[in-house]
Every structure is written in structure tokens, then in C-alpha cells.
Image 1: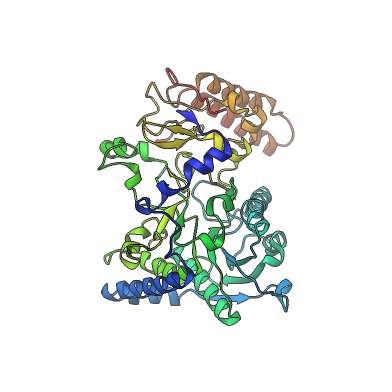
Image 2: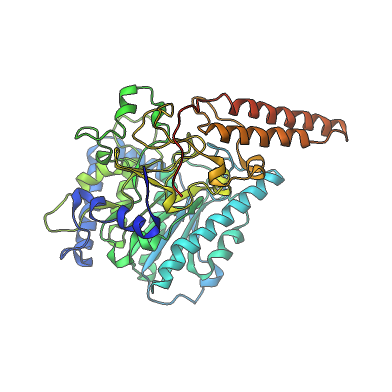
Length: 493
């Protein structure tokens, strides 16, 4: 593996014609707005027809949509103060103030849990400002933000509004505490946005749809370009679950990153849905995709909650035409986990998820473009984390050529390990660290256990005994949870 030498090479290597659909250029004579508006209307119409033709599905979708109610309001900062000159709309949706565990969507109401959630949400909004909003504004764009939240917000609304300021032009509140699918409130967000545009006679060059819990790591204007240049769907990368090495079918595991015509990862059509962009003219087309992906096949027993497979529908709803701009492109030419640290931490170079991944972010793991190394065998980028090894061309971290995480080279302190790292890895996942790194982590946890003071009330003594036992068990597990012999070393400095 070799290092991708900094941001300039990162931008040049990972974006461009190789990441566009079928290798086509993303700029051409037919990429003008009138052509896009026509294609957008045709796409929305085809999606409506696709829903009509699948017996019973349209009625089921409409029943689910009718059960979700929402109220849209205008923030006080926007009353009588909305100038013209729109160019980029950002739709921010999902659960704000998310919980801390790998899977939970619940809200931790404890004092410590509340502080964790508030702090994580602030960091995500700061990264949104610094790496999406301000870069576009510095390039001359006006950016408007449309929030869609749940009635049970999980934190003060001011925590969302104040950092974003007068950019927020509308807030839509889903009245239900939860919904059967995340796609239903996403549909609410898109319809509320379209209704606002119709009411204000407003339009935009492009739309970005993203989530509250994304912590952005790169300048998104450098990846997306000006809003007027977005002439098709822009997906971040090809999506691959971080558990691919643990797949029950070994043949499927072995060919995930194998370079051959039949199994080349570049033929993977799954896409991430945590952030995507498209021209404003495709907004109704996108809404059609959201509605169709609730039940992509007729016999689904319950609605799906993701858009990972939406390209299959786009193939039909937005057919390719000679001489027109590509229907979609990938901003980063690689395959990564769009939901990192749900299983293993197969990290991507664009974002982390907070607070779930706070231990990764606080440890400064894979936070720079140059941390991701290029593997010529699999033609893909990879950055080792404490439970994911590189390169992607090895199907097991026990492979002699596997590169595992080095705590000392990454500069992770003992205090960070004690305060932020999880104390265990749930099966079938395990720590993938160099031998010296395991010893460093073990010693950090044993020192923390020894530092816990006895005494105080019976409740305090009981808590100390429990915490001490947890640290000691974690210290034993980190030395035995996987193999570390014969591993390569991380050299992405």
C-alpha cells in the first residue's frame, strides 16, 4: 500500500471521470438546466408509473405516508428577511441528539448521556459549517437550510438553530415519536421543501440531503464543485458493509474486493444515503426514489429504511441518453462502509458518525485524507482502525500481509484510551492491533483500574468494584481477541 500524498492528490485521484457513471464526463453540452428540468419531470413520472404498476404497493405507501403528520414553521430570524439569490439548499434530517451506542436510536436522558449527546451534536454542526456551508459561501453561493426533526427532539431547539443562524429558512416537525421507516420522514422533508419553494416561488441550483449526526472531515465544495455544476446524482462512494470479512458465505467475502470482470468492486451498485446531492430539477425524481424504495419489490413484508439500492430504480426512471450528462457519479473512487462502527470500523475519508464514533474521532484515527492508503491490488483506499485491517485485498486480518492499527504511531494517548475507547468488541468482531499496541491498551486499562479509589458509601464501593472488574476484563480480552503475529505495519504518515 502507498500513501495518497495529501489533499491535492486526494482530490485529483479520487474524483474525476473514473468515478462517473460508465466513465462519462460530468460536463457536456446537454448539462444545461432546461434539459435537467425535462429529465427531472420525466424521472418523477416514471417513478409514479413504477409505483402504480406494482399491485397493492402504491396504496400501502400512501397509507404509511398518511399516518405521518408534520408541521412546518419559519424561524423568527427569517420573518420578512429572506433575500433572493438562492443557489444551494441543504436538507438536514433524521434524529438529532443521537444516542451513544452502536445501534440505538433511543435518547439517553441521564445527565452524562445528555452532555454526550449535546456535545456530539455541536461538533457535527460545527463540521457542517466549516466543511459544507462556509466553503460554498466563500465561493459565492447562498446556502439555505431546511430542518426536519422529530417531535421528541432530544435536546433544545436552540442548539440546532443558533449555530446555523439565518441560513435556516424552515423547520418541519414530524409529530410522531417514531415511524416504521426512516424514509417516511425523509419523504416529509422533501415534500415540505418543495411546498416552501412553491410558496416562495424559489428555486436552487442544487440540493444536498444529509443527517444531523454526520461529522464531516473534508471540504465538500472541493468534492462537489459549484452548485451549478451538479448535473446528476452525486453519491459519496460505493457502499460496503464493514462486516464483509465476517460474511457467512466465504466465497462472497473473498470476492468483495477481488479484481475480476464478474466481481470487481467497481461494479457494486449500492450507495450510501447519509449524504447525497442532486440538481434542484431532480427533487421530485428523488422523492419518487424515496417512495419506491419503501417497497422495492412487491412482497416486502415491511417497509425498508434505506436508499442503498436506489440505483436499480434510477436505471429505469432516469434512463441514459446519448450526449446527456451522466445520471450519477461517485465523489470518491472507492468502496467504504456508509454506517461505520455499526460492526467493524471500516472508515471512510468523508465523515464519521457522532456520538457513536466519538472514540475514533477523539483518537484522531483516519481524520486526514492522507491517512487512507491506496492498494494497487484491489485498486481501493483503506485506513486501518483498531478493529479493521488493511488493505481491502486481504480477506482476513490473519493474512501475513495485513496491516493492523498501531496505537503509538497514531499518537493515541493512554488517557484517550481510558476515557473514550469501548471496553470490548462484540462477536464476531475483534481488536486488530499490533502486539505493542495491545500492550499499550492493556496497560492503560490496568492503570485505570488500579487508580480507582476504595472507600466512601457502600454504593460507591460497589461501583468501584464493578468498574475495576470491567477494566481488568477488557485488559485481558485485548490480548487474546485476535492474532497479531506476522502483521505488517501502518506506514501512512
